[in-house]
Image (cartoon, rainbow, N blue to C red):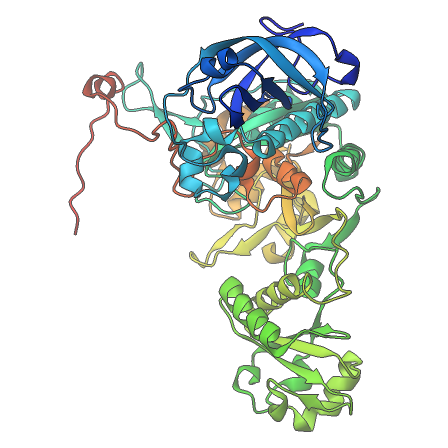
Length: 588
């Protein structure tokens, strides 16, 4: 029983015929047959019910009332003479004896048709998000989000994890993205930062004696939007385990995630435990990416020795040459041109191709340059009639990236090379601890600076930094990175040595991470964790291409909340309270 209604708009069935009921909802539309007869559809959160107005009095009550107004309708349930199998309530209708207007829609025209709001311009949808969410297809995504988060929370609790919320206002910390800064009123010239992740807090919890921690954590990063990344804020299933190894973390997520994906996803099959594990270097050399989509069976082959200096300029000496063999290739020349164009857009590098005809000869693309290398190429790749080979060339990193783009683009198009109807998880392991920064040219942490180096102190002191691997891992599903995690560096001495490699001494570490460093100096347990992105997981589960479709109130691509008008200006007094002065920047 709900206040002011006896049933929802999805609840009444044939067994309710003859009952007096009260329903409430949004006036979706009405088909007027005459001045005394009309068929109204009332919609609420749960579904729809047909209401039949059979008197001039009832019709008059809705005269001048716009659609999307909220109504309360009391009347009698009866069996429909013309049933609608597409509605759960399609066997019945309500004949009203009273209609009340609870909330008037003041506008004759809506910015978009509610049931087709997903076809509207994105900025219009975001400005009128309260109307967009009335669309059952959009609302269902929010229901899915709530259901998935609820199941994740229960699964983690069942695994023995305790939910703890960590602070939102904290200090600025080098996490790899820009902070959102909050000026302090009580401490002039100083700032809080919104957390990019609860990284330090969850590690401090491990040093505090908490054994298993998790939360559905809000994270804030001032970074540009992408299809799989919302600007501003996002949520992650943040977890950390004391006295744990990499295998312990893997085991938990391999139990928690597949059932949720299989139960609620657009595909009903998910990888069983254990997930496939691929070394970082192997992922790059085999798939051209550290985010492989294992539903695609295409891989990279290195044909540098076979084709180098064949006369085709991109294959000149010094360049790496990667090949993607596609067996039984049936796509048209137009489709091939589109693949090559899309690959160049994604990777920034050109690709090329050849085909094997019925006579076993190379045709099309760059075949004229490969005449003398034909047999060697066919033998190296095991080519047969009907196969097509795509090539990527350049510096090793660029060739791999282009090859990876080819695999991702060709896989869904080439018949028989992708098992789309499943969720395929894998772990990417053995990441390098360090790398040479592309911009700085200096030694930098490859990923998470808090990771434990493989080999510990001895490895740090005796091995080439670029050869040191970290106990770090990524979780990937269908070519989407869901999370990075690591066995943490819990030893202050090893931590100092690790940072010393990138030019930071003990005082720098104490200054940048005072709480965590201090906590570890009192004896911290070995610990490990991970934090899969909730928004990305739900995007995959829902089968959506854009992450904004599964976020209740997303920002647009320019990090603007068009509905609320954020970011916005503030009053001068508010700025003075926090000791901030704004100055205009002169355009050059």
